[in-house]
Amino acid sequence: MLSNPKSQFLQYLAQTSPEPMALEIASANGNYLYDSTGKAYLDLIAGISVCNIGHQHPQVISAVEEQLHKHLHVMVYGEVVQSKQSEYGKSLVDILPESLNNVYFTNSGAEAIDAAMKLAKRVTGKWGFVAQTQAYHGSTQGPLSLMSDAYFTDPYKPLLGSVYFINQNDTNSLANIPWEKIAGVVVELIQAEKGTTEASVSFLSKLRTLCDEHCVLLIFDEIQTGFGRTGALFAFQHYQIIPDILVLGKALGGGLPMGAMVAGKHLMQQFSYNPVLGHITTFGGHPLSAAAGNAALNVLLSEINLVDVQQKGSLFKQLLNHPEIHSVDGIGLLLSVKLSSSEKVIQLIRKLLNRGIFTDWFLFAADRFRICPPLTITEEEIRNCCQVILEELNFINAN
Ligand SMILES: Cc1ncc(COP(=O)(O)O)c(C=O)c1O
Image 1 (cartoon, helix red, strand yellow):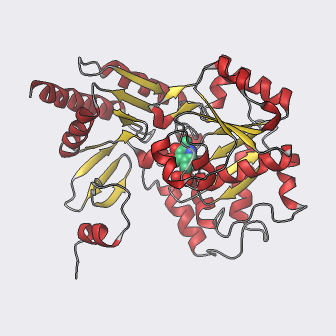
Image 2 (cartoon, protein in one colour; image 1 turned 30 degrees about the vertical axis):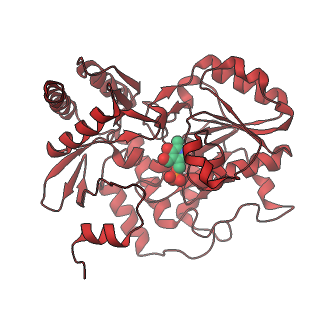
Image 3 (cartoon, protein in one colour; image 1 turned 90 degrees about the vertical axis):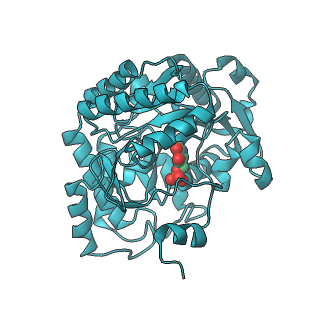
């Protein structure tokens, strides 16, 4: 019998890669993870943009504890009033533009993208989609259909047909899209897994105009960019362009699982008739997740200065100056650091782990490592961790 948690992990849990990191996390607090020996790791991943306000924030813990003693799951989403869901729906609508005034909570980001695709088909009566190359919208079959990379999709085909791929900021390619067939355009404003590449204002404006002209829903996937990550509450605020559907996830749940799509009530209502139950989900908007998410949002609004988030990102960019570093890209604390090869990235990630810094690579940019810490990371922690990164790069380059 295997009693060691790492052996149990390798033996009993399905693996998604041949060599998982397999760092055994015993606890987490603030900006740090702790392994089973008590060693601390500065968290440069934040659960991939989930733990934006840091780990174990006392207000989130007490909101979860309070709800825990009232009720857990009672009924599928949408049939009974669960106060935490309704409160959180209101909190979200309060901070969003007027046209985004109705929330549908799901279990995950992928489910929310899937539901957004369904809503776009329902509203427009069309079935095609436009998506960006090297975007990531989730691993279930709807979002997977929006993935351009054949390596990840070919073994699962046939997926949804009629998906047209465009490159980020390639405005010319938009002329070739058969808009009369398109229900929705799904966009990551900052393509996180491509290595944090930003959309241009002109590209997004063009998309907004084309969607309006051709009765197409513009869908922004802010699952990774939302909740302060880029130095604005939501990345679309940098552009002043408002989508028809905003899709949220990750930090939305304050550390518990949750996704959501937010749209106008007149659109969302179409899920309630002809047929009824247009999208249904048992656990969507679970009361514990709603309590945690709402508490985390309150903390974000009251304790995190978004200008500081931008300045912290700039400090990383300023300090990470080294011949091995080709560029530091991204915005706010959604950053990627490009090295000369993916091998060097792997070497560096291992060395940083030894030095108590936890980072990883990107799905479509293996020659980059991630800097996506809790937004609460301090200036001193940034300075110390950049110092360690530069020392380790010196070592790698000298050997
Ligand atoms: C931009 C983006 N969209 C969608 C998803 C899918 O979210 P989930 O893993 O909750 O299904 C992710 C997850 O990494 C993501 O980064």
